[in-house]
Length: 89
Image 1: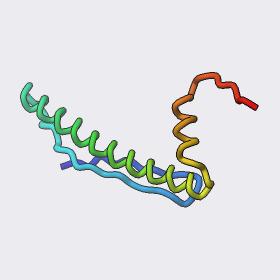
Image 2: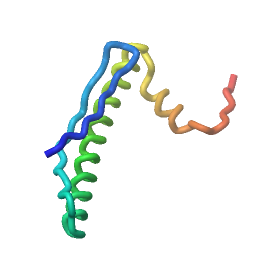
Image 3: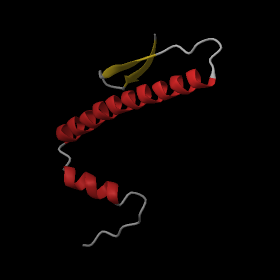
Image 4: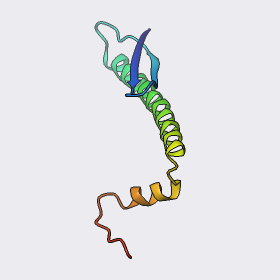
């Protein structure tokens, strides 16, 4: 068994490490072994990505709470990202 590891560090004190186990591919894999290995690798990486997304979402929500940012304003800004908007006075 091998381990794939992703480390998150930020300018602040926050850091986290994400690890997922993956099977080791045989030295001379046949087509079925290669397909099985790649399917397991993909599943492991998807699981890692889910964990990272949960962590980053929680971190963003915490930063917004500390900064006093309104979640509805964030949603509006995200919806309008890349669009030119005119502020009404």
